Length: 399
Image (cartoon, rainbow, N blue to C red; front, side, top):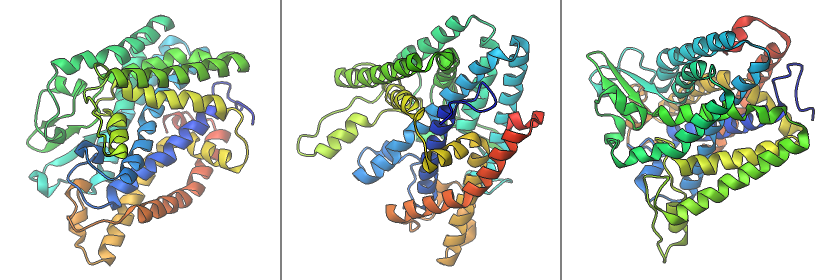
């Protein structure tokens, strides 16, 4: 497969891995809406769950780091065709646009309650998740990219390796971040800002994601190298990150706020304890294992061919469209199925953690719905990917 299309900054392997992240992400969101109702947004937070649901959730950990890292990489590849001032203007404007989309479009998709959630006292629930993290990080990167690339890379690595020192004194997330607090807490912990009319839940603490994007920006040069050298660097970096994860996890002292413990009589529980690292905020260990796999896959994706690779590439070229549409589709399907089963629709015009306790299905149904969602959205994504490939309208770069 050709490594790039007509735009020199666009790499097929990047689109393929971004597409893989997109379809894995959809599993997680189908699970959110259709799996047995739970007050916890993250099933791994409970500590004791079935291995099959644990690993269903675990494989989706790959998604957010890939999106943020590759957003930084894509920005870094634009350096050759934009001046610093042009790139700054693009990143800041696109970042502001993404934050606005998160607040106005995506949050409504999660709740279907644009005028307020009754369980929250009628307040409008605004959930600041991965689109917020990408948008806000882009705004910061728009400023950082005026610095030398090596310094941006160093800052990114410094944040990735150093931000867990904040665990020792930063306020911890309580009540799944639903409690009110000052804005600065949201830089490294889940927290909310609550006003008379709005409840802003900062589900993705920002600081580590700024580090991931800056790291991706600094790594963009790798993709301009000769293929053999590029693949060697990606493979060695990926393996090195995975080795570092296992070393840090075995030492069990730094790199994640959740120390693990062995359960001798339950091998599966021991494995889950070992792999259960923090996503909110993304710990050093979390980023090592997820980005480690991503680097290895980026190396091998350069040689992927065939129909499946083309499907992944299609999804990976329109991740923003897929993200928005799939949330609305999954939530609408949830309401349709619930109404057929006799539930009151009003109970599902909510955040999924507020769904009725009797709602939900097992994993076979979850995976069946997931495949249905992918099949339904593929033609839409294929059409829009072709639009982006053949047209050069300025606004397409914001979608």
